[in-house]
Amino acid sequence: MLAPVSALLLLASAASGQNGWPGSIANEVNGPSWPQFANATQRWSTYAAPTFNEVFIPRTEADLSTGLKYLSRANKTWLAKSGGHGYSVTLESVQDAVLINMGNFNRIAMNGSKVTVGTGATFAELVDAVAAAGRELTVGACPCVGAMGAMLGGGLGRLEGLHGLTSDALLSARVALWDGSIVEASKKKNADLFWGIRGAGQNFGIVFEAVFDTYPATNGGMQYSADLTFGRDKLEAVVNVTNTLLAPELDPALALAISLANDPETLEPVVTVNIVYPGPPDKGRRFRQLYSALSSNYTEQMTAWAKLADVALPGVVLAGCPKGKPHDQYSILTENLSASALASAHDSLSAFARQHPAANGSSIFIETFGQRALKAIPQDSSAFPHRSYFRNAVVFTMTYTDDAVAEAADGWARRMRNTFAQPSVSGYGEWHVYQNYGHGDEPPSALYGYEGWRHERLTRLKNRYDPHGFFDGFHAIPRNLADWS
Image 1 (tube, rainbow, N blue to C red):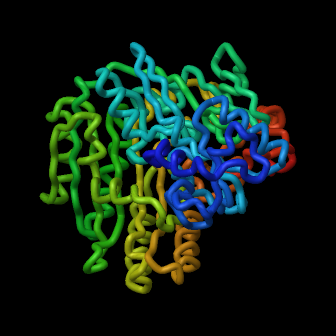
Image 2 (image 1 turned 90 degrees about the vertical axis):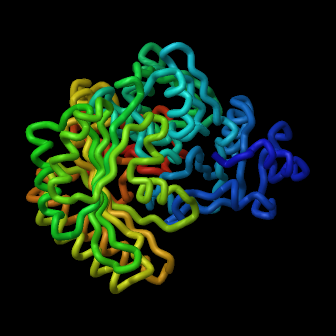
Image 3 (image 1 turned 180 degrees about the vertical axis):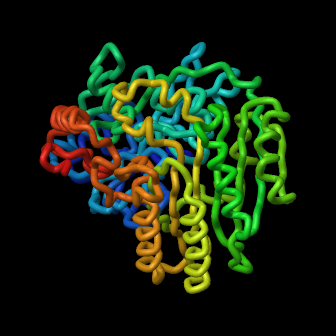
């Protein structure tokens, strides 16, 4: 959250009536001369980033509506921001735009088994509120990501094998459309929009408030977590253990994460595995023992779900939270993990880091989560298209301290993604990319599915709810069926 946003608005109140904005919201709009402009417009990644010449920080739903009416009538380009972690290179098409900073919509309220979430809230804040009520739902591993933005792309997470995606828990949403009109989307109201916002939601409007179902906390909210470290010589064996656990399907409660990186001092390759199991420690240890047979270098503990982000791969996950650094990422979904391909990729990453020390913070990250609940939900239930292809998400993340290596880093990651996308490596005949992890150069079908009926439904929704393309900045759905090819 860009806190305290209310304080920023007080500082901004003197600068009103800018560039024709309606008087009722003029003191919520500021330009680059405002001392807090850089802070209010900062995003997680600076790579291929959008640029802004104004920031609009609405206080209320009515202010948001008024602002959108003005922006659309003035034909101005805008981009809404909650957590600001979206990093697709398609965002670079948004230049000299108005940033709609949704930080004032950071609110969370429990009501029995349901939780109402404003679009300014992060996963960390959502988890704290839900866990305090003895409940849980699927959230992403990174606590600093905006909860609403992640949900719009589907919302993967460690609990998806038990509860499905974050978007699968969505009950209703309030959406501000391009012309400032406010609509509710649910199974009973605007059901077509409700279908679309769960997996492709950033294409249709600003989802500023949502109600989610939650579930009783598994194992009383206590989870087993273990981190194991291996040398490069054990990588193939680690991958083989993981594939054994994947055959034929991962335990629905089990969540695995593998980081392939380099030692910051020696530049030698390092393999780290995290195991999370929301159950008794003896059951969690059974999985850990499969890996610890390869290395005695491990830690394990029972932790509350609300504290999991502090203990599970903290040097990897929390280290990635600071904003304002370049992050150039490519990803692909795979059926299994190729030990030979990963070994080759890790060796190549280490060689790249030695050649370009400024990029030594780069890594390969793999998330392998249970699938039972995810796959039990019908394929046509939402716009999320990957229910049969979500076994492993492989992400190539390039970050660096010197922009001189940007081109080489991008080329390396793109080549790796293309290699892992080959059917002989991914196990799938087509590219399947979780759109929240998409680079932005993928064909739209890789993000939104290959079925013709999906194309027709999504294009119809795009033309109905965003006919002028105001929400095209992040993985735009084609408005013409021919453009899906």
